[in-house]
Length: 406
Image (tube, rainbow, N blue to C red; front, top):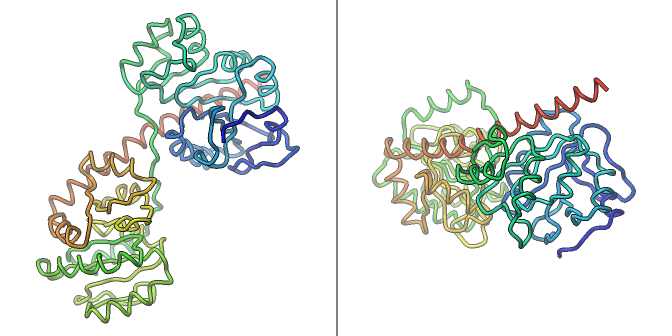
């Protein structure tokens, strides 16, 4: 549960190799250190995505992630440490120990003393994801002078809308510091696929309608197969690629397919896809990169029955597939909601509605429109993330150059 940390506890935490390690006695990691503060739990997933991308692009970078002092570790998960209270002695000790090269504050909950002391040490300071209503100091409204002094420590302030930007500029902050950018979103970074293999599988399907059921749980098998048989009545050359979430279930599913008199090939065993093949069985998650690319329509499994937990839809959307899903999307429900609002995803509740949706959405114009909407959702988040990474890299480069001169 929420608790304050002593300075000794802060000194027991460091980021090594991209993950925070709770190792008593360790000091500040050597090299370049970026401090990122996450003000709200719903910002954590995109910040973790930001961290992964930064670490892959900047050799030797170390990261320190902090969260509000009143944080439930069970909700937020591992790898973060609560900020110290905004008190002179603790703030001084925190900064003396970590000595960050730059700081990125994500969201509101600004701590005036901590931020002013950090800026006084010459570190680059950036603020992002500021929304209207974030400019509140705990339960008290900001005083104008305090707001201006605190916000002015940041070199760049990224707000989510023009109204928030105007409110910040009215405090006396230079307009050049303030820019409008979308909220950070978790992005998709699908691995490339060999063009020759992609071209070969496209030739094999030879214009046949194809749909994919990805991350299919055993308790979803009968619904997916029933939906496929239903769709086959109208789309006689339809092919289902069924990817099983648990590879151990591939063999029992193959036997079930034979019992249902569905002509199946086992892709992982080297089976050939023939003109009469109705189902392609796949069990390796790595191959989803291929199937998302060749299937204009994907049902994202682990979602039709309660307890499945859902799957991240962004990779499928990024690779051009229209999306279907069940009602249980788990921790990804916000992503599915965004895609649904954009017209890129649709929810189904059972085998019958799944079968109807497959027939309807495999019409070329429908699948293409949904795929385009999904791509727009993915790229919106990618542009905001890319611009922030570029800003961070520039500030760290400036800091490194300054250190070299001194």
